[in-house]
Image (cartoon, rainbow, N blue to C red; front, top):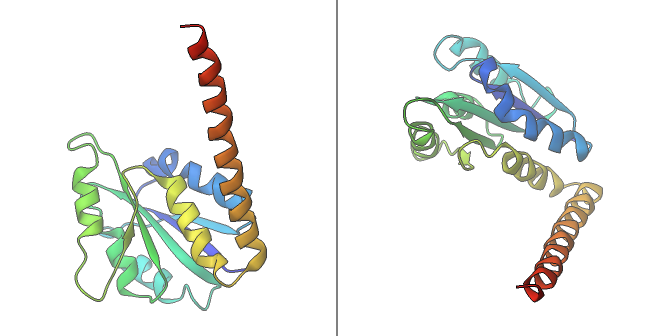
Length: 165
């Protein structure tokens, strides 16, 4: 199975990406987590993404706030799918990061999830890898069934509460 890289622009992004790390581990996907800056260590970021395929990665997740160029820098050096997680910052609550991540030039796409939506980034990465992995696809299908069952149980509990009103 291909690995997933999670690259953070700063170690302060760890609380944001922790749900992605946990989700990928739960699905049995090997994950490598690193700190690289699009602006402070661009050479290292380029080298990492340029060698990601030969190093066994199938997807790269890039978490960054503010200018949030990390996803684009990583995507520029690889043909692997790159998923951006815009991280909330003090000034614009992540809107700046979301716009910077989603507005890529033609030919260099970065898939983008919602602000701080690391779990969705992990699930999307797993879905991409699962295209060629039937066992992982079954895990994802079972996860969806479990989510649906949880909603049904919550609805049933709500219906019981409504009888008391």
